[in-house]
Image (cartoon, rainbow, N blue to C red; front, side, top):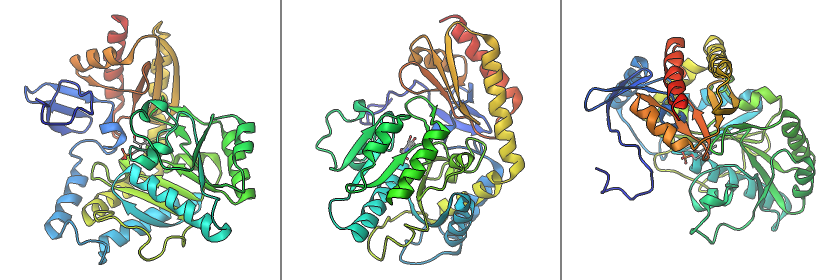
Length: 389
Ligand SMILES: Cc1ncc(COP(=O)(O)O)c(C=O)c1O
């Protein structure tokens, strides 16, 4: 079935033909409850009528005009996104198509900011062990997990990793003579859903401000409402200099965004950066609908409530196979005592889609529209699988 693809993905043996809300259907008509939202992308659920309408209405006008010109829908999307990110200090946005591209943009901004202000040699980007920032050579250079580095060197020069939570290492590594930026996920997603300690984030923000090092939050997985605030960073009461977004931002239409605050908003000038598809009208029309829907405080409060339901139900089992439950809102990691992959496979058989993170962590990133009954139904399936594992 998949011979034509390069074998980069360990795909599960299912092919979907349609979806609705939290459900996907395969060719045989079997239904699957989706706790993955396409790795945190389909935040409004499948075939959400208002999203289908927004996309089809835009497609009937035009999908794309290139960034040589302007379009009202892209401008409105940019304005509303910057407004949504204003609470953490954002002023301007650049659109690309993916998370990796957004982080590439962030690194470019940090380097140019530092070069123009302090001259050559102050170009290092510090990031955290256990982080995930993308698959391009430069974003791999910023990704603090050895397993992704194998076979692809040499990497972009000027990246350094520190252990998350270690205040001394943070202080030591943020050398104002050589460091341009600090890049971090406030909740590390790919490595297992590890929220950073608020005291650590506060210390990082202070050190960066004191030393004029750009603080860059990668909110590609944890942003756009996933944790119950529009940006996960809002909960920490700190202002970043740069924020990157992708995944749920256009609910399934590819998009990435790098946003910059006061210090860095004017760093990139004409010709410094570009992206053919970046923020095109189709992605913008979808993104506008996401912003309208997700920014409603009642909608965000529901994400928090549903996340608590997940965690309460899971904790209530006191299941011998569960070691720890972590996360915020609808971004949840569950450490188990056994390998995650067979659990994913058995859950698939039973009609439940879940993700893993690392080898022994299950990860849930369901659509925000998931109902209480669907949460309970999916968790019951999982419980049955864990009971028999
Ligand atoms: C935190 C984080 N940053 C960056 C990326 C890379 O995003 P993309 O796959 O869209 O390039 C991901 C993807 O999982 C992510 O979770």
